[in-house]
Image (cartoon, rainbow, N blue to C red; front, side, top):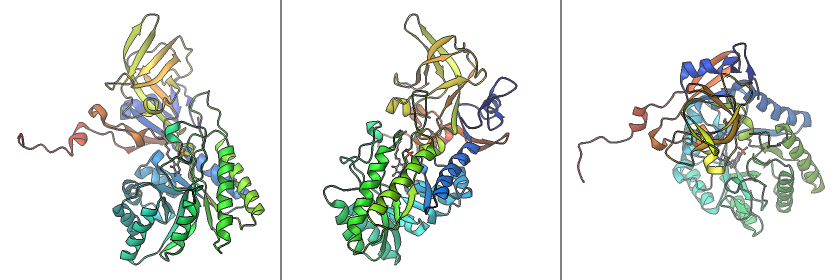
Length: 434
Ligand code: LLP
């Protein structure tokens, strides 16, 4: 992936930096991001739109990995972002991110969060439900302000992916339902509120999607809807088709190249808009995973081992479900190598266990590896999306440090959490029994 190679020392190198040296310098578990690969992904998405000559906006779904340095990288590369909480808005704001290019998503944004978004200057609110339309209008009245909005539509399309990360199907908590007419009710309601400047619609059909069929169906459903609304004199300026482009975690995954999804989306939107006799709206996409997953590698130090003759060998590392809950939550599959011997021939099959007090805390089952020793560094690939961002302090384990690497240099972007950080919010008053 990206700039990964084996260097002269025979170690895995990322961004021209030796991962064994990274492990020594910053400790493990460590998240390493290949900045060049993130830039390449961003440039790739933009290039497809530029080549097609259509108006567009690439917004990064920051839930995949949100950090001050990440927002700064996005800003420098000229992409927008989608934020889903006051906390993400705050982090983007701290980074000096131009919030006018941000979209605020979520199925239960609070009045306080909407107020924060409006005062912080978030450009677009993606309205999810009727309650929120009222809340936002009230906030705007208080500030005597207007804001751009999109309506999130649930198009009733089931993308083929894990049930927990499917989002566009009819029976979903997100968005205005299409079939029952809620979408058009929301359209009418918003059109009657002059503080809400309706620019178009949004839909997101799911995540880790390998086929373009779902995007095509969604685009068609959205254009059909916009064609109905056009009869009232409304012209949509924006069609946001969300994210969800799949990535390759292991050899079993066969995603398209990230640009292929976008090429297909542009083609289908153009075709459907022409058929419906609508002006071509700006096309917005919101990739999260496909922007950062492959750029991320987790480094762990190998520790204990348990051999069950004829059954399996467990090799434990110093991280686990606290820094990457995806295997435990979604049965997500990953690949890994020994960073000190990345090309070594496999001599055994082991299962990589985390250090957390749960049997389900397994990072990889049945991984072929060279002989490993305590102290070796295990590099687990494609952990850049929904790893750190879903990290927890379960068992009061500190969250890992995160570094950016590029052109032979590393830069610490998130410090390793300390024990004191974790106890920081606990009140330590004289014992009482209330
Ligand atoms: N836009 C919206 C409205 C979304 O809800 C999401 C993801 C995205 C964009 C970005 O989707 P992506 O390009 O990353 O697939 N924690 C799960 C994934 C949850 C995705 C939630 N929404 C996982 O680890 O697989």
